[in-house]
Image (cartoon, rainbow, N blue to C red; front, side, top):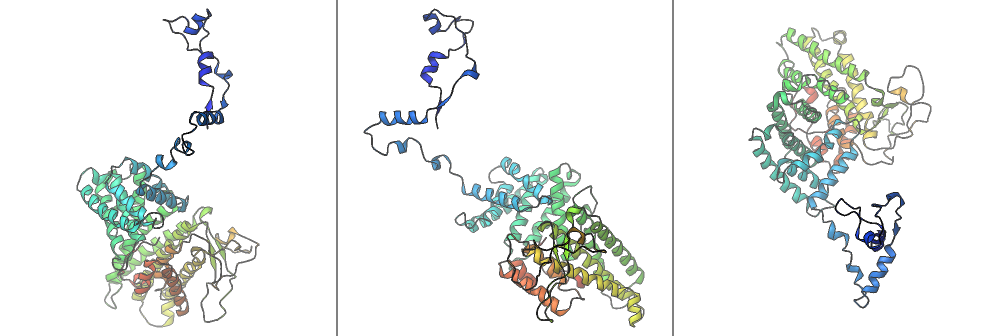
Length: 511
């Protein structure tokens, strides 16, 4: 569209203001008038002359062919020819950001990516890592995206090797961010033939954190990188039953509940490692050492309970108890179901539950060693029955999160008002309860099914779980695996050993 003041007439009516050399403009001298200088801009009249301009162009070029005007303005594609990697990166950034909860610290970390990417050079570790994970997510938008993703991934590995050999780049935020992006790549592309690749990158990120030392927490970005690495390293070491480096166990002033939770849970792998040798002895164990271990475990379990009991209202969930059961009495159905504010909150709650399962299992094994008799009264006296009840309640809570994280529509689910309800239950009241358990509910997208894999995997090995519930958990994992998640398939192929006191044969990120 052409907006004009008719340039030729403006030249006649709007004079250039005279400077000291020329007391009047040429037109004023010719007309023997005093030049008034610039006209008041508020009095200028603008009009749309698009149609007049087009009509003049047609009259000037009569006889030059009917398609002449089509060539006056180049098509938009001549101006905008984005690179394929730009399409992939933009898609990765926008879709990832839109799927991250406002509460999730990873969202803030993701928002730093554009500026880091823009200032990094072509061929840098960060650029290559970003492009590798981006191409994984756009197979339908970009031709040969999987091949490009793998090529960029291999190039990123080489670039990271060069970066960590440089004293400056080894401590740069871009290098650490690149390693975390490769963790994400391995999580997305997890293959049964290479289940430990994610764990390898997690260890690399932890090594960079340790190398950076006191300069680690200088900015919000570095704090975000630290918390992300700590979350990953705690997950990895819980599965390996190996202690976490003390740099990750120091409490920090992080307001986000997830960061607070992982700061507490970072001490659990060391207790698991201690229990590997101490609690597996059928006889001859030093009971003073067992009692000391049990005391430490109980203290951390209390910290976790305090964390759960002091969350803000935005982290609480609705809890429905009157659930339609399966038609076959022998089939398992959850006794209650949960509805959370979002998938992120549900994931963090399930990590809390797995952490407590590990601690309660350690306490149960310790209590068994401390027994002095075999009768039922002695067993009850050591508190094992109470611990087993807590373990089963936590497993039931994990199962109660399944409908929400699988994307079932729980919008009609509320909780009847009554006295004695928990903080979670008080969130809803006086609307009919939803029935769930027949598998016929319509689903919403996206789902949080990926984050269910590890909690279900660990819960399935709890000694308290009845066989029909165990089979139900396995069916949930089978359903997730059937939708193409290779990590769920890994979980089906290998029974979990976490609650039995042994390291897992595989490592994966499912939170």
